[in-house]
Length: 309
Image (cartoon, rainbow, N blue to C red; front, side, top):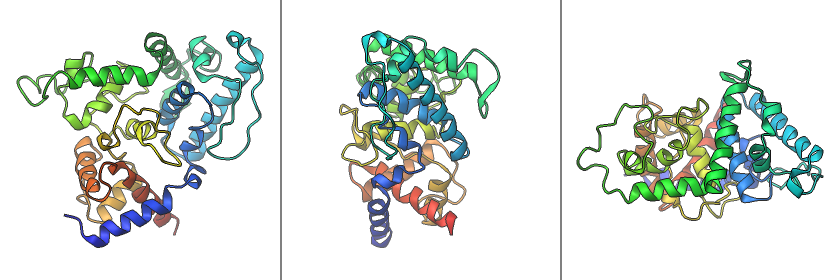
């Protein structure tokens, strides 16, 4: 049981950091670049995929990609949509793109010019060909399901209708890649806490840019899910009203792990794993009932401030 002092501290920190200014310099600054929800969730997924390493470096890569998508909108008929994109406002969190559509950039193959099939590295260990594969798969998902959110919802809903994953042969596929997630029954073999991220992973079999094991930390995927699910936030979009914030896990980055250990929320040597994320999230549910991932703001913000001192 958490002490009242620690719980009060976490609530104060969450209030302090979960503000629109959180997006300044953060990858979440790109979440409202587009107007349409379908564009927002696709752009957010690519943003989350590249959100690791030095912020200045991956944000520069993301800016270059979005500039290419905007240029494509300006130079193409874009399926009858407006050819002109509204100029960027420069305000974090504000819609910046008018006529451009990230979904159309993917669907028409506009991304192929920016991401040629080359093994040259685009960012860190992801090549241009790896990014092209990701864009191609996203385009296919939208063509088949209408949106990324609709695809995840279908997989997640079917998996939860398959029964209790702890019964019968629930663990037979453990250790397989990606843990036998090709079917709804496969997704149902993972613990309930991991089914949402497992449903998301199942849509990207073999795609190098996407973590394939839901039992790993999957920090980037859990961050993306936080963006999509949490509602009423000045940062998170809350587009997936069919999902519950209570089902989210806290994304485990270095700051969150360090501050969680420093506050005695996890063991000092706790690994960045799904088990650690589940344990931490369950404790944070005591502080933020129904919305444990809100603690991400408190722990991450505290870590950034501590590092800057």
